[in-house]
Amino acid sequence: MVFSSLIFLYAFLPLCIIATRFARTVKIQNIVLLFFSLFFYAWGEPVWVFLMVATVFGVWLIGLAMERSKSRAAARSWLILSVVLCLSSLVVFKYSGFIFETINNILGTSFPEPSFSLPIGISFYTFQTLTYIIDVYRGETEVQKKFYNLMLYVSLFPQLIAGPIVRYSDIAEQIGERRVSFEETAQGVGRFLVGLAKKVLIANHAAEIVGLTLDSTRLASLDGLEAWIGILAFSIQIYFDFSGYSDMAIGLGHMFGFRFKENFKYPYVAKSVTDFWRRWHISLSTFFRDYVYIPLGGNRLGLPRQILNMFIVWSLTGLWHGAAWNFVLWGIYYFVLLTIEKLFLLRLLERLPGIFGHVYTWATFILGWVFFKMESMSGIGTLLQRMFQSRSSFVTNRGVVLLQNHLIFIVIAFALAMPLLPWLRSKKPVQRLMKNMKKREPLFGIYSSIVYLGLLFFSTMSLVASGFNPFLYFRF
Image (cartoon, rainbow, N blue to C red):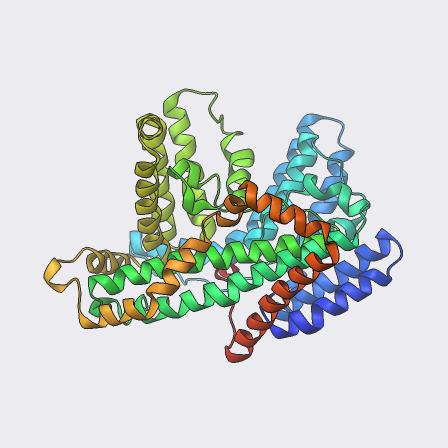
C-alpha cells in the first residue's frame, strides 16, 4: 500500500483516524496505531512483516539485557550482538547477491548467487532500530520496557516504508504522551495534501518524461537535447517524489500527534555540495554523521584520517541506496567533491558571488543523478556520451519537439522546487495581507480549505487516470 493510492486515501487513512479518535488513552491509541501499521506493511509484504517483528523483538530483549548489564564491557557485547542482528538480515536480503556476483566476477568462480525479494523499507527500519539500541547504549535514551511501544516506533506507517529516518530519542516522549489538537490535525492534513500533489501531479509527470528518454532501450538513439531533458526530468522526479513522501509522512505524523523532523530544505538552492547535503535527505546524512563519522573520529583527528572517514561514510551511503556498483560510484563521486570542498574549494566559493556556487552545485548534482539513475556502467557511459556528444548531432527534430512539449512543465517544476513561498512570506506587503486575512479567520479557513480540496481533487483525478505509482525510495 502506498500513500498515493485511492485505497489509502479513501479507506485506510479515514478508518485509522476514526479508530484512534475513539481510543480514549494513549496506550489504546498506540495499540490501534500498531495494528494499522502492521496491516499497512503486510498489505505489500505479508511474509516479511514477520522478519521485521522478529528483528524488533530481538533488539527489545537485547535492550532489556543491556540495561541489566553490570559492566560497560557486557553492555558493549550486547550492543555488538544487536548490530549483528539488525545488519545480518539487511546483508542477506539486500547485498548477498551483489557480494557473490562481485566475487564471481573478480575470481572467475561460479558460486550460486542468492536471489531474494527485497523486503520493502528494510534499509529504513533497520537504521531506526539501530538508532534505538545505540542511543540506549550511549545513555541518551531510556530502554523501552513495553515491546508494543518499540514495535510501534519502528513500524509506524507514516515513516515505515521510505523514511524519514526517525531517531527513537526524538519521539520517545511522544510515544508515551501526546495530544492531537484540531489545529495540529488541520496542519497535518494540509502538509499531507501538499506532499500528495508533489508526488502525483509533478513527480509522476516527470517520470513519464524520464520513461521517454532514459529507458535503457532508448539511450543509444538519444540526441544530446533529449538526454539533457531526460536527466533534468529525473532531477525533478526524484526531488518531488522523495520530498513529497517526506511531506506526507510529516503530515501524517501531525494527524496522530507525532512530530518528525524536516527531511528536505530546498536542496536545489544550495551554493555548494556541502550545503546540498545539509538540505537533501537530512535524516540519512545526520544518521551517518552521528553513528558512523563521529564514532570513527570525525573532525577530531588529522586531515588524512578525516578524509578516510569521509570515504567510509560515502561508500556506505552509496551502498545503502542499492546493491550495485553505480550506487558505489555515486557515493565515491560525492566523496571526491566533498573532499575537494573541504581542502580548498568551499573557501573559494565563499569569496565568489553566489551565482558561481549555484551554477557549480547544479552541474554537480545533475551529473550525480546520471550515476544514480543508470543501473549499469554501460548505461552511465552511454548517457554521458549522449549528453556531451558533438554539436552536429546534439539537436534533432525529436529533441526540439520533446522540449516544446515539456519546457513549461520543467520550468514550473524547478520554480516550485525553489523557496518561493518563504520568500513571499518574508515580504512586508504579503505579511500585512496574511495578517488581515487571519483576522477574518472563518474566511481564511474557507480559502485554505478550497486550496487543499483542489489539491486533493486534482490528485485524485490523476490517480484514477493512472496505474500503480510507487515511490522511488521504496526500493531502498
